[in-house]
Image 1: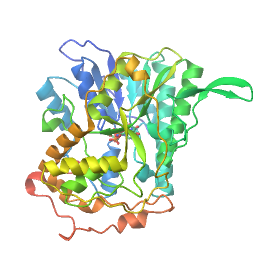
Image 2: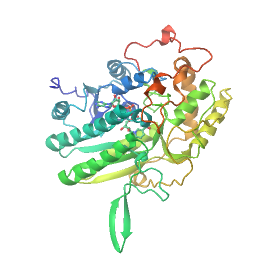
Image 3: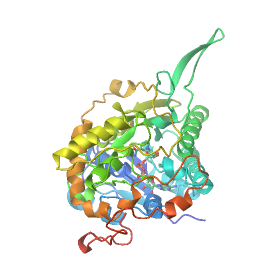
Image 4: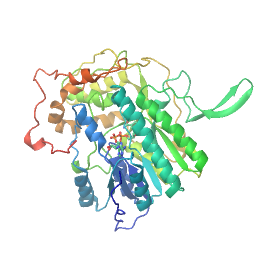
Length: 435
Ligand SMILES: NC(=O)c1ccc[n+]([C@@H]2O[C@H](COP(=O)([O-])OP(=O)(O)OC[C@H]3O[C@@H](n4cnc5c(N)ncnc54)[C@H](O)[C@@H]3O)[C@@H](O)[C@H]2O)c1
């Protein structure tokens, strides 16, 4: 298939101070706030997206609690509120000709690659979703690497990986590499990855590909081992027209998002299993700060740099307790229950990842979890009807031990005594592409 002819995105009229950044996945949860943050810093921003996250979230019967307008309306809001342009090319990274043409036309100095299937449960639904995730994620990255090598070989690739690549080993987790002494010989090797879903394995394979490409072609690459991101506000998102997604269903929502949604809906908060699973977390605003630092302080030619990007580790029980405590401030009194764990994972384990590199580049934490959770509660009160309309999607249907969870997903009946999902009220009714 031939990609449509592309025109370079219009330049800013207000004097750009930063370089041109191409964000793949600009319509997504983190791509959108990153675009706003980089614009505010004076970078020229161009995006690519095929809107597949909107489609995949609809596929499991859900939507974002925050209404997300069509991309053209998001661009128009940026123009109206910030007086800035965001260039955009609609297309799929699976189409190599499209990827080549975007790079040829835009010639970015940095590519922030976020356009991947990012849900572990989605990848565990059945063989088709596993294949879709791994083939899609690896193909997009390989297409970008080949096109970079050919068209913009000195550009810097900032690739979103995940802390989940490391799994939960019983030793400290370094930033990408570690020194090993084995049978009397020493080396510096990639730290072993022990991913916990087909999605997480796709990120491991991606990391290997980016490391290899930077070695053979002398590309500049930063592989960000991203912790779980929380929050829907950044300083740039001061107006509802600029909001980013808040997914709360079991497939797309993080544990924290689901807990907050459960509390708002008057449901019990449900950490899976024993609840001592620990993961690294970072606020949306601070994740954007870190990515911006990576963009503005690029890796050297041929360097494959790994940054562990999180601020603090919390267990799901700690998240549940914190959510219940903050819910109390809003007059809500959720209980905490422990359903059987649908995932195959250690429910109590050692967890101590190192995260020093970003601090040496100038990163400073600016947000505390509890404060951000309070802001989310405040926002979700206003979008409560959108949560109500999809309250049946919060509890798990996808089982790690099963090879086919499609039937469980399809049979997921609304559990609310209020009956089936209601049509949202007129003022909240989404148009076709509202996610
Ligand atoms: N959100 C988190 O907490 C988190 C944590 C760790 C890692 N990550 C990683 O960060 C990246 C971004 O995550 P997110 O939460 O913003 O996800 P998201 O799904 O909200 O955003 C991804 C965007 O990329 C687009 N996209 C996907 N495949 C595409 C393709 N083939 N061609 C064009 N566009 C495509 C989607 O439509 C979507 O708008 C992902 O790589 C994810 O694995 C996210």
